[in-house]
Structures are given as C-alpha cells and as structure tokens.
Image (tube, rainbow, N blue to C red; front, side, top):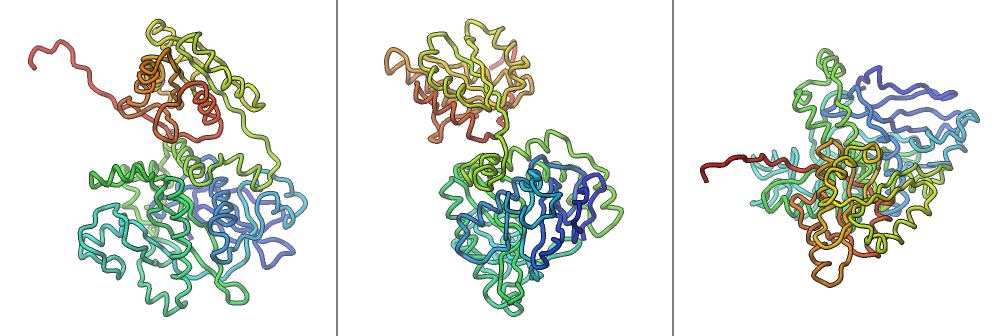
Amino acid sequence: MTRIPDAVKSPPLPGLDMIAAGKVRNTHSLPGHPKNRLVQATNRISIFDHALKALVAQKGEILTAMNVFWKTGPLAEICRHDIVAFGSGIDEFLPADLRGNVGLQKTAIVAQTLNMLDVEAVVRLCLTGSGWDAYQDDGIVCGHQLPAGLQNGSELPYPIFTPTTKAVIGHDEHVTADSVAKKYGAMPERLALQLAMAGSRHARSCGIVLADTKFEFGRDENDDLVLGDERLTPDSSRFWSYLAWLSAQEKGEIPPAFDKEFVRIWGKTLGINKRKPEIDSDVDWVHAQTVPEDILRQTTLLYRYIFWRLTEMKLETFQRDKMEIAMELPPLNIQVVLGSRTDLEQARAGIQWLQSQSHITSSVNIISCHRNPEELRNFADSAAARNADVVIAGAGKAAQLPGVLKSWLVHFGNLTPVIGVAFQGKDDTDEFAARLSITEITGQPVELNSDGHAYCGSEGMEEACRAAVKHEFLPKYIKQKPAELNIMNF
C-alpha cells in the first residue's frame, strides 16, 4: 500500500474498524452490515503515485458528490453500481454516535463489498499523455493501430480500451485488452466503453471534453460485475474546456485540464515525478516537501469549477438538495461597483435580488475609473475587496470600469472574480461601446455570460447577480507587459 504521511492521516471513526487507508480514500467495516462498508474520501492528494503531505480543502466532499451525481444521473442505467447509500442515507448503517455527522455525510458513502478485479479499465477518447508518447513511436497505443496525422489532444476516431495493472506500490503498467478479456471476459471492456461514452456525451453537452478516464469493477457474491471505486472524477479523469480545446488544437497544443494540474506542475519542478514510490528514501524525501498554499487553493477552485460545470450546481446546493444533508448554504460577500449613480436605475433589480438572499452580504459602491482613479485603487486594496467572493462591476458608454478594477485587484494579488456589466445608454452606439469595452479586453480577465459577451442592461445585471451566487469561477490572471520608457529608436 502507498505510504501516507502521518500529518495527513485521518483520525479513527468511533465504533468502526479501518480496513484500508488508500492514497485518497479510507475504508471502514460496518458492524451489523457485513456485505457493506463505509468508504470515506479524504482531502489527501497524490501525484506520480506518491501521497503528499498536503490537504486540498473540500476535495473529499467534491469526489463524493461527483460519484453520487454520476451514479444517480447520466450513468444510472448502464450497469450496477456499488453505492448503497449516500448523504443523510448513510445514517441507517452507522453506529448511533456517528449519525447526524454532517462532515461524514458529505464525504462518505456506504458501498457494497466487492471482490475487485486487478486491472484499471482505462478508456481514451482523446490522444494525450502516455498514449501520445506511444503514438509518436509507431502509431500504436496499447495494441490499437491509430490513423496517421494525429496530434497531441486529437479526438480519437473511436474510444479505445487501454487497461493497466493495479499496482499496490509503484506505477501501473499497460496490459492488452485481449489479456483482460481472457481473464475476465468481454464485459469489463464493454461496460468501460459504454460508461465513458455516456460520460463524454454529458460532458460535451456542458461544454467539456472528456479526454480519458478510468473505471474499476468488482464482482459481488453472485459473481456479477459491479462498478466500484470512483467514476468520472477529476482524480480519475482528464477534463478540458471544449472551447479551450478547440483553440489549443489550432496551435497543435492541449488546453489546461480541470484536475490536480497545479500540483503536478509544482511536483515536476521538484522532480517528484522522478522519485520512485517503491524506494523508502524517495518516499521520505517526497513526504518532507511542503506544497505551497496558493497551489492547494487553486486546486480546490479547479475541483469546484469542474463539479459545477458538469452538474450545473454548486457543491453546497447539490449536497443540500440531492444528498439531503441538513445544512445551510455558506455565506457569500458580493461587492457591487458602479461607474455612476445614474447606473443605479438599471442595477436596482439585481441588487434587490442579492439583498433578498439570506446567506448573502452585499454592498454598493459608486466609483468612476476615470474621475476617481485614487478611490478605485484604494477600493481594490481595501478589506472590502479582499473579503469579497465576487465583485460585480458595471458601467455605461466606454465601460472600462470592470477591466480597470480587475487590473488593480490583480496588482494587489487579489484574484477575486469580476463580472462585467454594460449598462445601456441613450442610443445603440452607447450600448455597443459599453459591451465592446468589456468583451474585447485582451486576455478576457473579466467574467462574461455563457455566450462570451458582457452582461447588458437591467436584465443583464440581474443575470450577473444570479451568476455571482450560483456559478463557480476560475482564477484569472493578467499577463504582464513590460513598459517601455523614453524610447529613442523605433
């Protein structure tokens, strides 16, 4: 088994015996329920088959909720799943002292005990990763001859099954689909392909590309095949934005993935990818490394974002409404910044909706980016801006306020998302100028609507307010451009 750093080991659960502690999940026995077990997803994170001395906030909650989403939604009817109970439903199987434990309800499921197959059922829908490396050698990926002319990130003409071993320590190794079929029959491959295709169709409807994924199967007491472990989570799958993928493919590149990418990149800079998990001294060295807090925070944001994109619900809303966990929505602080008092008329309905939400704190500020440059700078550096979860910035005519405010926030190290709203003016020219001033900012650091345009007018302001509450946002940076002063030669 993978060695877990002492600093991130989970405390015991009263009345339950721990059966196993994996890189991410802990498995416990359930007294009185010998056919079931409690599987709890932790906030632990692993890269390159090493468990790190780090915790990613809410990761266990997101993985658990994602499993519940796929099991009860897009993958529900394809095959049998191991999940017996989730959310508040796990209380039926727990000792009295553990019932009503909201933290446990968010991170644990009751699962059927299975005899797990010793292979990982990997499905590739796009050519990337180790598949791309193999393809460049001879055009063959795990026994599949692929057409010539593909590039890194290309969508495959058909999904391919590329199973691997399930290494107890160290790296998984590729095996052939034929060897899996010889040992377990055709059903693991068939189900893996069906599950991946169903997941891909749903993801694409959400503007997401499922590049590859893995499943694990086990057999129950009747020797029937059952889907176990995790399904289509950012720990087991590679997800890309469809639009970002299209843009990247035009350049022969792949887009950033919605998973633990930030942590992997950091790990490579230290050489963790070259440390062997089967060598104790290498493991000790990895466990001694400290993952920077900003990388862990951004990983949480990525996991929350892909959950929202695929489920169309924020994590806490899903937990409350779909997992039936008795919990309040977390408080949100939303700051509204308008360029002029005359903008209040178009902003009023949206602001009133914000004020009607019991878990939201909001305030309205009027700061012109042209006439109050020092006040705008001070606001960007204020406690109000630092404590905000989202800023909604709206202006009319040449609506430069959203972009300028975002620039100041980034300058002060604040990655709070800024939603841009263009207010209508006296004619179409004013409105067009306001929309353009927000939509066409280089690098698009301001949050736009689902069509890639600025929210506009009174209705747009209401939509922006709802988005501030119900959407997840990725951190956006502004690429620095060196200033050139006193140029003499040009």
